[in-house]
Length: 248
Ligand code: PGA
Image 1 (cartoon, helix red, strand yellow):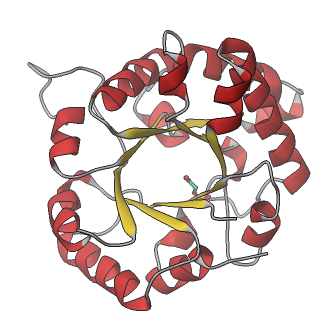
Image 2 (cartoon, protein in one colour; image 1 turned 180 degrees about the horizontal axis):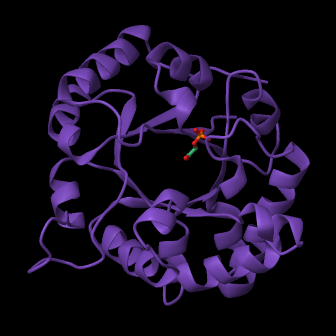
């Protein structure tokens, strides 16, 4: 089954490097899974040109929670749409930690992205202390209920959620497949309660946190896990292309 494999290149690649990265990916040819590359804002215009009618979709890593106006230094959902961004990451743990992103701002961002036909990739997940004190489900329930508050059922079906335990991001300590599955089943149940069974079934839920070529298969084999959000291992085009072709 085709999965969604999102590359989060974070604050890497100037325009020239992004161009080389994308051209290398395209030259490697079509992949088995759906590819989305989330680039820094400055590389989006060049990427938008290169990726026209290709098998790779373009994504951003953030968006402003306001529609437009006096918000110096911010980038709006409408501006991302103009650059053919089809996806945008919101609520990544690095943004929550370093840039004070909250569930309330994530909620506003999701609504604006949907309004401008961009699929939000909503990141949720517990930190190490919360994991060790068995608070994972409580954290997930709180993040999901606040982030998705006020959405319509048909909007929720268009979302992507990424379960990313904070302790697994960039650490090489990926979550056990069973634990990732349990968290994803729980997130689906929360969405089922908040919206409907059909929304819970249709929403795509990814796992993220130290996904590499040697562990990706075990996540993708799970019927519960719809794909992966990949940081470090996506930075090398050949490596990311291998991940796009991992098959059971
Ligand atoms: P990682 O990052 O794959 O390097 O752990 C994942 C992420 O931050 O989305």
